[in-house]
Length: 400
Ligand code: REY
Image 1 (cartoon, rainbow, N blue to C red):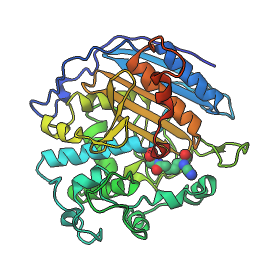
Image 2 (cartoon, protein in one colour):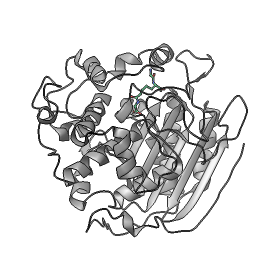
Image 3 (cartoon, helix red, strand yellow):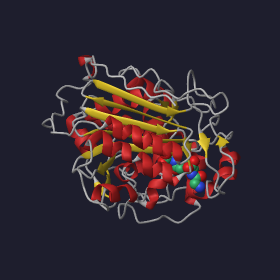
């Protein structure tokens, strides 16, 4: 086990040049947040290890004061200790990147969020009432093709790990099913929406999503650990291996590190690190990636359940202390990610466990948010709200 609490002080982002657009400061008054409970984060990660995660890491950036913590291994074969320098697959946190690209295109007057998807991608979807805004908010009704794909976790994964899909093939898999709801009528999380988002990016820019992530986000923010390598199967440089938990109890973990992630692409194929995701979310919420008006639209939320809401490619979680944080979770085979920040972007947390398909670990890792943003729990009697909140993950949270 390795434990590191590394505190460094510096400017949150040393680049005024990152103000890509004038007048974007998103200056919510600095909320009075409890101090992060770093011992609490440690204890959450240790619990995740006891529940089967080979390794777990977290990084809290509190207005430039950075704390990192790591337990367990990056590689079960060599026993190498995991650290916050390790890259990993971020799953659906990719959706925030895709949404940012589209919001920038909207700022540039190249995309109307309330236009029909059909206007930009004629004939792709059977219902021309579906708008871009509905797609980004998971309100299109498009069925999530990954439901059937991963009904059996290990064989489902093995059957796609080396495949290269076109976006259209993924959309076609969705369209074999009836829509889950009429356009705009309900929230229903679906990867299909962010496959459509990727198609929109490529259609409007004439470039691959990888090029757009790089030019618009990765390079301006100097994210040195963030890569879109699809359909390459290998994570560049130093990385944590990812271990998929089989459905049958007691079966050995499956090393899922090498895969194309072609089944997800613009819905979930980015690689990153805790440092880069903290930087990205702080920049986004701090108003440095799009106009203030556009960010407001991205943050306009529809309630999902009692503790969660969803905007445009952005999730809000309401924590037990009354603080709300914005970001996304990610679940690809072998990796569970939580990446969230305060509304003003001044405190961010990214946490990773290098396993997946393990509901106990996913639920436990939610506790990193409580510790990072709510501080030490108030002294409460048994059965307190703070404890109960850990158990209230919505069923859909197991995948999104
Ligand atoms: C894919 C299956 C979940 C994960 C998914 N991920 O939609 C997107 C996300 C990109 O939200 C897999 N679960 C697991 C199963 C369940 O196979 N039978 O946990 O590794 O990040």
